Image (cartoon, rainbow, N blue to C red):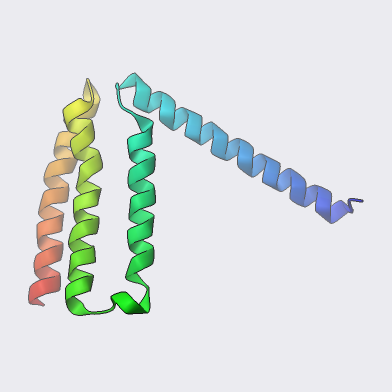
Length: 117
């Protein structure tokens, strides 16, 4: 038997699921318009979340391991713009060319800052 609070909570979750489904469909439609596979982006997101989770485990504490995670995350963050740059079409290639350049410079600065400061 539902109470009033339970019904409100159920409606809230339904709206959240509807909103998530809307944004997922919009993102996959945008990816397909530019001849890209949306599963690549989902896989990269999951892989990045796993790396972030591993970073906080006590067994992976140490300066060299942290640097390895940093370089791995920055490399992973560069994969999506490179994928779009190489496989995408039209304006996606132009926008992601600038993203790749900016990301490369920021990664170099971030790694140098972590290593030398």
